[in-house]
Image (cartoon, rainbow, N blue to C red; front, side, top):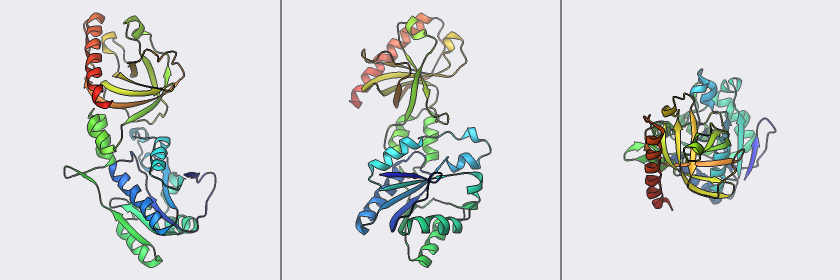
Length: 312
């Protein structure tokens, strides 16, 4: 798969099967669309192209920029897109100025000249262009006038409810990780770097790695204790993660700390780690003493070890 960025260059493809969207989360509905994209590409014998945006349009259009954290960063999304067999990805630098481009200008100045699509595939709820004027019905009419086949993919339902990035984001921030993972079709994960912490884990004889998300716009789960699976230093290991403010010690800074169930994971400072969230174990709570906290941590670890068996 080749990835191109609009800030670097424009590209020209003779013919294509194309889709366009932000794809925050790349959930089961998006994956259905990607499968249709690749299958049509094979059927027509022409390349598949996915056009997307960075930063996410809602980040630019929302006045409260910091209130739109992302389920996945671009690197995570590109890995999933590549795994589906897409040929080309074109990442458009989305700015305030770009947000004012009409649907017609977007189609006639970017999509047609650069990709010459014979087939365009979008979701039934996808809109683009200034004022969201680029609706599926608009695209159907555009296709008729330009000899382009338009395929509209209907939403995927879970128990008669439409799967969406908004719904998944609510699951994550409510701590409903299992539901989020089901609708994502993968494990919600955070890429982070191990940084120096307060050293409390060592004092408690429960060594932890403090993680800072690499992406400052990363969506975080609800505070609490989670069973996780981590990949670090070439090793895979289960562990338990606490996201919170450590109320037992009257701290206020939000931290993400992980105790790995693997003796070989040492000397981690500065290392990158991918943390997959599997299940939420309990709320974060304040204990009267550190001994009571240690007692609970041992119970949490045993609970996580037992639950981890179903993920092996």
